[in-house]
Amino acid sequence: MIFTNKIYIHLTFVWVLFLLPSGKNAQVIKPTKELILIAEYNIQVPEPSGLSLGKNSESLWTVSDTPDNCVYQMDLKGNIINKLNYFGDDFEGIEYDSIKNVLWVAEERKHEIIELSITGKKLSRRKINFKGKRNKGFEGISLCNSNFYIANEKQPVKLLKLDSNFSIVSTFDIKGIKDISGICCDNTKNRIWGISDESKLIFCFDENLGITEKHELLFDKMEGLAIDFKQNLVYLVNDSRNKLYVYKFGEYKD
Image (cartoon, rainbow, N blue to C red; front, side, top):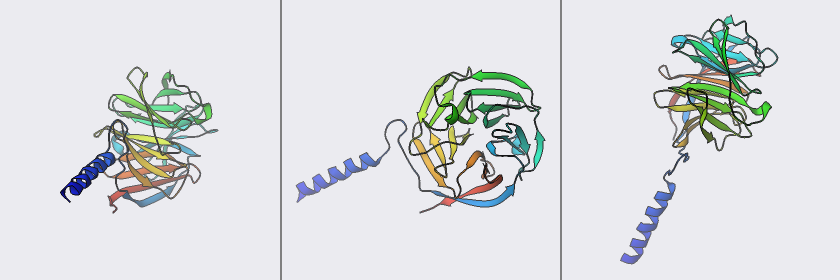
């Protein structure tokens, strides 16, 4: 009887070890938080794709998809404040850089990043050395501390980590997600939040743990994500509905 108990305890210990995360990119999915819709607004930006909070989180920047291919600044209710006089090729992602007070825009098919002044002047253009499909390319861009992160939409679904010289230093396979349509960064925790159009969810990615959280959404075609972590507010744009959605995180569900 004592021998049997020892075997049972040993097997239980092994099973617990098997369930624990180990190694890089281990999947540690927490219980899903409640994502509460608090507002939705119609917007006049045609097919918005990409989203970023502006200076002091007082506005939002977004880009429109083909054929408009423009950069817009909106207030937090989706009203257009400004439209920049710069036209791109296939805009899909945008990031406001509060340190330099500039915008970084991702071109999907060209695999390029364009640096723009907030008045719309082109400051630089960077070609990223990544081999992917032109029509399933760069969908999101985010600046996290001293690194840029770029989301490749699909085939493959990847996050690219770039150094200050725009060279790729790491790539991460995002498993269990059909595509990535937008990203933003939590600088305090050094984690990337992403949104998936086809999977209809928001996820949180840690370089060492992989996906740590998932939050389901009601709609597809969510193409841009920005999170105000201080105010606990999540902003999403939907390109087929031409809407801005505002959510907040609730408590963890059982």
